[in-house]
Amino acid sequence: DTEKAAYKARIKALLIEKNAVLVAHYYTDPEIQALAEETGGCVADSLEMARFGSKHPATTIVVAGVRFMGETAKILTPEKTVVMPTLAATCSLDVGCPIEEFSAFCDQYPDRKVVVYANTSTAVKARADWIVTSSCALEIVEHLDEMGEKIIWGPDKHLGAYIQKNTGADMIMWNGACIVHDEFKTKALKDMKALHPEAGVLVHPESPQEIVDLADAVGSTSQLIKAAQNMPNQKFIVATDRGIFYKMQQLCPDKEFFAAPTAGEGATCKTCAHCPWMAMNGLKAIEEALTQPQGREVFVDMQLREGALRSLNRMLDFAA
Ligand code: 13P
Ligand code: SF4
Image (cartoon, rainbow, N blue to C red; front, side, top):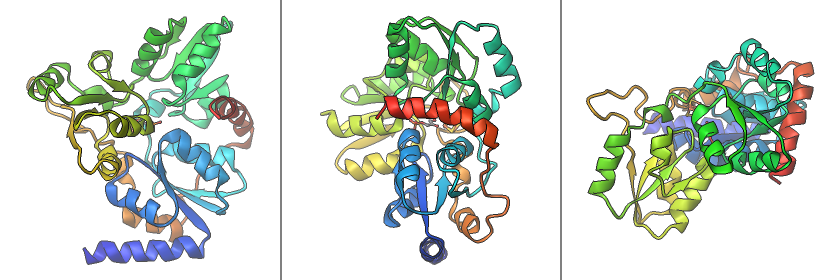
């Protein structure tokens, strides 16, 4: 509509005026992803967002995603201005892994390598030996296991269980979960599969083990998008945030995508497969991030940054 078109036009002009680039996650709303693409920014998974922002020549990065993505951008490029539509866009994994408790947990096992998911605060990243995202977690843990290392894993217990099952690594888990992926329902998914037996099942590994067990492909957001393109199926059932359908449908216009069920057996869905924090990245908030950056700019403690950068760089070098 015309109001949205006016927002988009103003944001486009502001991005140029401020030498800024818009980097969006696949879970943001379709119009935000489209805007990032139209303005020469990128739509990506969390690992690619980090890479894109740090390589792009813009002096301001607008991160449409959740807080840890903004912090990662700032850790990698402290000389740049990093703003977010709202700093309140957190993540249940980040919230569920406070530094004091996590650090005390790690202290109990000093002989183990601390491997943490990127969906964490800068302080937790600084406490870690390695950072991983879902696109490289399996390979990194496999590598550590081959080196004979034992692991402390946090915060996502489902991703941890998936990795442990596939690598056989010795892992002690922190008890965290994503509120969005945690809601997928096994019985309802089995029923849906029975209804569409020809459909491929694509699952993000933050989903519970029983959901992952029903998958034909498991991976990060960008890996699931590639699977949708490369697998011969014409239909797919997708167990991840529904924001991902924008890119899947764009790249595979002739294929059909169904959202995996979140409300089976009489339960009602809370998130309905859309992250409430990703949903905070609206057009109005993006414009405000560019016009009123106070309170929307991301800062990280410079001492913590050093530690977090060390473990982030390990991941980036490994996954290069
Ligand atoms: P990806 O690294 O797959 O983009 O996942 C990030 C995330 O927050 C998933 O919920
Ligand atoms: Fe965090 Fe889940 Fe939202 Fe991803 S979808 S940002 S893991 S709460």
